[in-house]
Amino acid sequence: MAIANQLMNTSLLEGLKCVVFDCDGVLIDSLQANIHYYGKIKEQLGLSPITPSEIEYVHMHTHKDAIIHIVPEDKLEEAWEATRNFDSSTLVEYLKRSEGVREFVSWLRSAGFKMAVNTSRGETIDFILSLMDLEGFFHPVINSTKVVTPKPHPEGINTILGVHGLRPDQVAYIGDSLVDEKTAQASGVRFWAYKDQRLDAEVHIESFWDIKAAMQQCYHGDPCAF
Image (cartoon, rainbow, N blue to C red; front, top):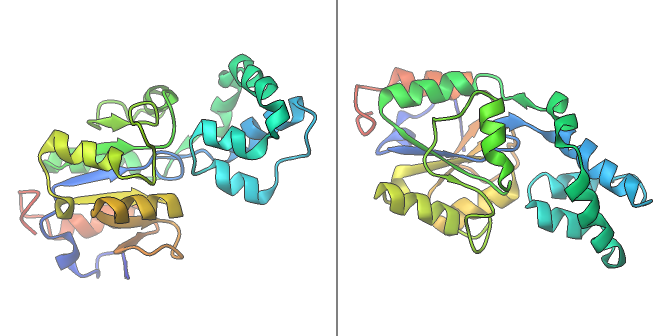
């Protein structure tokens, strides 16, 4: 296990051509937004307050799977109606961009690295990227509506590999959950864990400033030349 900083072993960066990002918990801090949203859905259905284990689950799974997980089967129809009528604009105040991430992706782009997104979030990802001033950095942006089987299935990562003509060893996937860890393992790409040292990762990132500094110190003008 390596911690991203200026003293890390730079061989861990050799051959890297593309960085893939998860959205929630990585590009953005959306935990409070998820707590508010799913808590309100449960409240509207007359259910008990959302629990810590439910919060952990909904934060890393698709919207559909999250609702099915926290709502009894006999209330699912009512739950889907509640989600359709929910005013998403009320969540904006609970969202914030992760510290240093825009500076990191800006540097990656200037250095010639390819970037993509692989998220369990649905079509709202485009709105989120625009809202957080992160639009235009990533291609492709894979969300749960663009795959047959969402994470931890490797379909999303495999699609990104195909779009850019890359091998798994040329790609690092930055995630913050066990689902992301399993996604990386299933697809064979490098896994870089963000702010969770319990995860089994090649590199652990506590700050985007740290990983940016680590990569800058060994960058020699080509995304393959470290």
